[in-house]
Image (cartoon, rainbow, N blue to C red; front, side, top):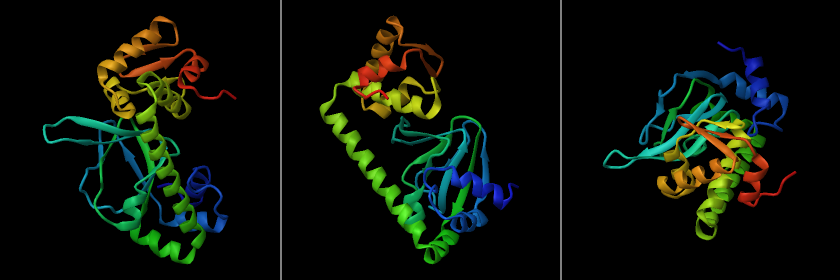
Length: 226
């Protein structure tokens, strides 16, 4: 089991917990629990009790859902540094989606009951949680705006840029997942990726996309380059 002091260092590097006082980080670390998942192992399913918050140390988690006929829809891909489960952390209601590891994944878990007791003593943690929720709402609004006004190719390029920023030039993602994340059909994703492959922007492997010219993809995504 990872010691509390090591957990505190992991927390301080996490975007959600960064900026909290050393005392607050130490208090959160005291209630953290370590979790490890194998590839394709289920963390929780839609409807399961919402018992706490998760933060990924390394690996990847697919957030999605399954319809009545068994079709899977990917809502988000989360990686190192990402925090999820904050809605269930606050209201304690059932999970709104499935969470499944796509690769070997290590994370830490913050139980809801202990966390609620903690934020009663540490208001700064509550403020940080509110900021995270506001950021999620802004991101959802931006995605809705993209879906309404941007062409499919631009939306796909933007999604790839975001994935590259999280996972590097080799992104492990299926074309079905890219389609769900972008809000277009798989056929549209495949056609566009093949076109970008022909001009040398990227290459394709099994359930992965290797980016060779990220600046070119950023231009297609209409994203400003540093």
